[in-house]
Amino acid sequence: MGTCSSCFKKKPRSEKDNINHNNTHNHHHHQSPSNGKAAAFAGDNGGVPVFSEYSLTDLKAATNNFSSDVIVSESGEKAPNVVYKGRLQNRRWIAVKKFSKMAWPDPKQFADEAWGVGKLRHNRVANLIGYCCDGDERLLVAEYMPNDTLAKHLFHWENQTIEWAMRLRVALCIAEALDYCSTEGRPLYHDLNAYRVLFDENGDPRLSCFGLMKNSRDGKSYSTNLAYTPPEYLRNGRVTPESVSFSFGTVLLDLLSGKHIPPSHALEMIRGKNILFLMDSHLEGNFSAEEATVVFDLASRCLQYEPRERPNTKDLVSTLAPLQNKPDVPSYQMLGILKHEEAPATPPHPLSPMGDACSRMDLTAIHQILVMTHYKEDEGTNELSFQEWTQQMRDMLEARKRGDLAFRDKDFRTAIDCYSQFIDVGTMISPTVYARRSLCHLMCDQPDAALRDAMQAQCVYPDWSTAFYMQAVALAKLDMHKDAVDMLNEAATLEDKKRAK
Image (cartoon, rainbow, N blue to C red; front, top):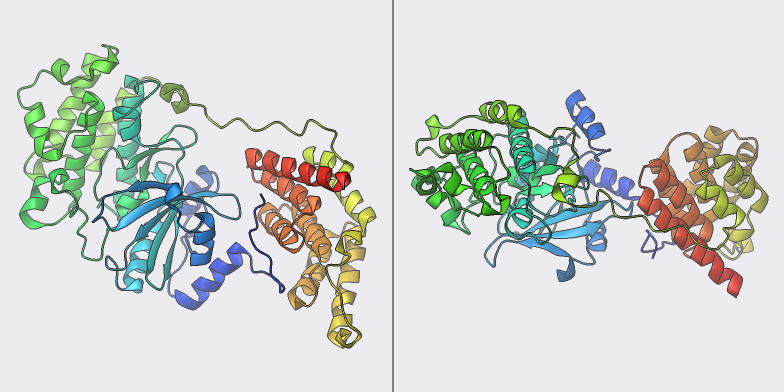
């Protein structure tokens, strides 16, 4: 029901604390991407997290212990990877790719390869946000794209086929993604095909980051299906930037024809063929023959047998950019999907004063309620014997008292410092202190920290509606509005249950 799946007697470490802890101990030689370009793209992508190491515990919890029910992609029995859909404690949806240890025996090699890909940040890529090396486990963590693959929309569509303007947009977006990766020093992309093109919550095309990372330390990424390899790979077993252009040509043919064409058959598909004969009949003639000819010619150039005769990524972008003819129409409209899942309605029954204040994001009213409530919700969460009243305990309680005075006087930064002193000792756990510090973080425009504190309050007191209400406010501040409404509903339900007792 809630976002925190377990409780601890001692102060639990937050997801971010776990990440930083693991990085410090295991990969101190790596630096998180922090250059200006990475930061700019992270902002463009709605706050993509910096690349980090995740614990196996986090990823097991996110995927229901890697349940077969949440598998979204697998590449056959011999393939060294399976992809799962998961959800972290902070409510972020993720895609988790699981490798076999045999593919990457050396955890350092795997980590180094992952960090190389993790430095990239672009709004045309489903970005890599983390990895995990734990025992025999080798896992990648990426942004989750909720609207399926190009293959699904192109070959297995249920409602409508992809219109011509959207096919042109897909081609350009993937060319831009490849050009960005090439410019950033990652020109190799493995197994580029219609299954590697994903659609985000807005229906915009994204290139899967998984193809930027080798499937194994020796780079044998095509071992599962040699029918889909560029011709030079069959000759020398190597993937080059020119190989990527060849694979992009096959994707262009897929977009033109609506059929999945293996590279081994691509050249014969275009030799001497009339462009109209090749075009997808489901388009019913609703396309520009002139534009289709440009795409057809570009595909022909990409599919040249000699790698040096193929265009580079900048050529791909410059050829496709002028063809875009519906720049102002959102992608989700052209795909015929809803932009966002409809948020559930707010509770039909009257909200409590706390629920009403949280639904209105009225931080001042929330503050007043928390001051008036004081610590009555903490009753029973901590029982101390006389022997435990040490000087350290007295100092800790004094820190909490100073925090309470600062909280009452709206000196929120001082309150954060004092409450942190109380929490860091870890002898007593107070859901009220977590809730109060959560509000202080909100008042200081720190919604991530506010969400963590509200989640910790829930860990201490799993059925406390205030913990859920504070999560709702923090989620709304993070623009996660559907999740915020879900949390608001959960809090109101808990209040109803309590009243019914």
